[in-house]
Amino acid sequence: MGRKAEDRTAKYLKKHGYKIVERNFKTPFGEADIVAFKDGYYCFVEVKAREGDAFGLPAEAVDKRKRERYRKIALYFCNMKRQEVPCRFDVASIYQDELEYFENAYI
Image (tube, rainbow, N blue to C red; front, side):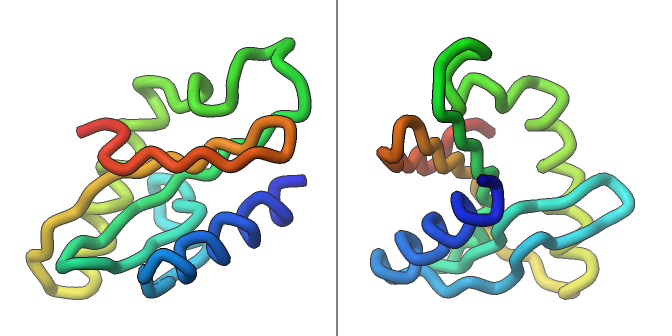
């Protein structure tokens, strides 16, 4: 289910003018599902999918710990690229086959 959700999100991003830079970008701090680029920003996208709501809605699973991990991943990425480019953190939430995309989901 995770791979299918990531594929669907990547397709959505491309359709909306994003360039996919990395998928499943691995670092010592964890993995970013998708790193995309648009309008001068690197967008670090966490993809969450659920078929039911027994464990809450997908976007609710991006907790404080996950947000902090993504901040470290972004710093690692920019250091690796030797670039200072603005970054933002987005969340793709897929629930009951509906994709909802949150730009700037957190800072």
